[in-house]
Structures are given as structure tokens and as C-alpha cells.
Image 1 (cartoon, rainbow, N blue to C red):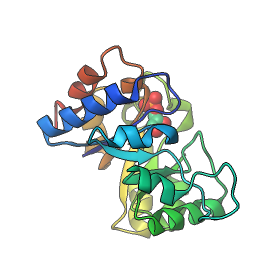
Image 2 (cartoon, rainbow, N blue to C red; image 1 turned 180 degrees about the horizontal axis):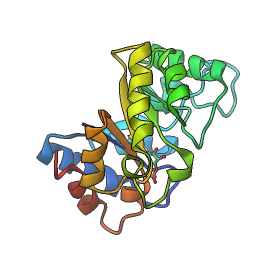
Image 3 (cartoon, rainbow, N blue to C red; image 1 turned 180 degrees about the vertical axis):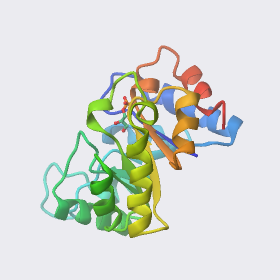
Image 4 (cartoon, rainbow, N blue to C red; image 1 turned 90 degrees about the horizontal axis):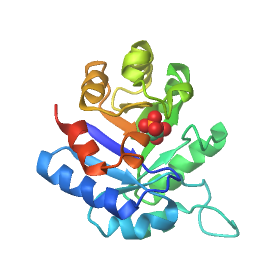
Length: 214
Ligand code: G3P
């Protein structure tokens, strides 16, 4: 199971979370990555934790003011990137372009989507993984695996019908080891979560709880 902690734009200390994630990953053997703000990628990567960007744009080098360049986040130390997160939606052509840009830069790719139909479309673009996150459950207290288990199973089926090698992650409302275990039982091989760690009083304890059943 892969656990990706998305720090969004939360006012947490990215170094505290990254250090805790690296230590819990080393102690448990569970793969844990942290996805901070683009401006924090280099110092988060310096902690030794696997570091992901929250977004990259489709463009390469050139006249693209304000863009998040895949090559730049890779140079800063990112190993992967989210694309088309629910809070950073892109047009289909731009999702495709961002996947290609990330691949050129050597980044692992995870394309997010709202539902199984979109998961099928996302899988057709050839990312390394897709992630289903029902927007209405994001930031809430109820895990997607509990509130809407069918959406996870249907997403796994939709992705496999397009590309049996694509990994399927899920996210929204996940905050405990029981939630992670339930998601795994539904066929997810990775978890995206944010508030359960980024807003926790003790991020390390939250991470330890997440990996406890694994
Ligand atoms: O990228 C993960 C995120 O959208 C889920 O957020 O706060 O429900 O864990 P949260």
C-alpha cells in the first residue's frame, strides 16, 4: 500500500510532516510520500521523504509565466506528481499534456478523477496510477471506503478494463488505519489523504495509526 500525504495549502509545517513521514515509512516499511506546495518541494525532499508535486503544467521550457514546470519540480527533488486533483482540475487535453510533461521529466504520475467513468478516461492517458476522490467527501470525516465503497470497486474495474497495469488509488475522508485497510480490501493499492495528517495535532501519531494494520 502506498500512502500519499497531500499538504494542499494547509498551514502545517511541511518539514515536521515530511520528517515524520520519512521516519514512519522507515519503521513500518510502508511507502509514504508527501506532496507539499511547489515552493516547498526542495526543502521537503531534503528530509529524505519521497516527495511529490501537487500539479505540473503541460508546457516545457519557454515563455510560460506562472507555470509549474515538470522539469523544475523534478530538479527540486520531486519523484512524482498529482495531475488533475479535484481542487486543480484541468481540461482533458491539458491532463494529457501534463502526463507527457511529467514523463519527460522522469516523474511518476497519478491522475485524479471524480468517479469511475472519469477514471477510465484518465487510465486511457497512460499514467502510472489513477486516483478516485469523490469531491463531496474530500475534507470530511467519513472515509470514501465507508461512505461509497462501490465507487472504489467500480473505479478499479474501470481502470483495469482500460489498462490492467495502472495502479488505482482512492482518497477523501481517510484518517485511520481501519480506513486504509478497508480501501485495500476494495482493491485500492494506494491512498491519497490530506486533512487527517496535515490538520492533525500530532502528524506522526496520525501516520502511525494509518500504517498500523499494514
Ligand atoms: O488529495 C487528497 C485529498 O483530496 C483528500 O483530502 O482531507 O479528505 O484527506 P482529505
